Length: 122
Image 1 (cartoon, helix red, strand yellow):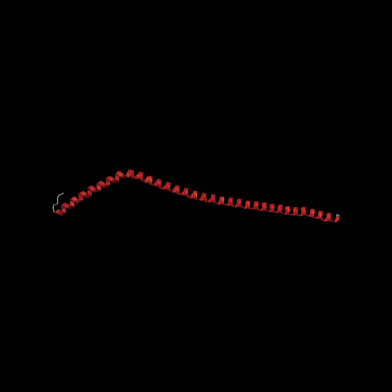
Image 2 (tube, rainbow, N blue to C red):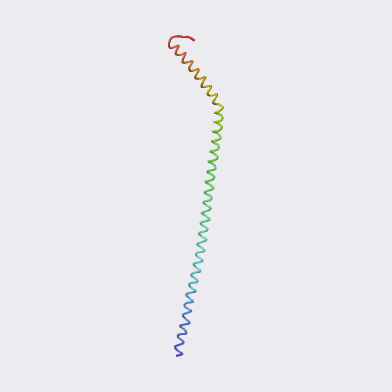
């Protein structure tokens, strides 16, 4: 009977050692997975920071372009405003010149009609 107990005790001692080996391998696998996840997380964060940096740069470029368009529009509006104000000052003079030109043209037409009709008066 002593012979029977010895093999059983070896088996019973071997079984926990086998289970312990599996548990240790599983723990190592979990550790490796955690390390790989942390590495992937760092990579994702670095990519996100890089993308954010590029988007900010692009936004700055777009904003600079919009500001330059804004400055150009202000310059054009300022010039148009100056011209419009100048036109307001010039308009009465232009109207007088056109009125005089019409009067002279009307007088010339009358003169030509008189000349054509044969009577030279005036």
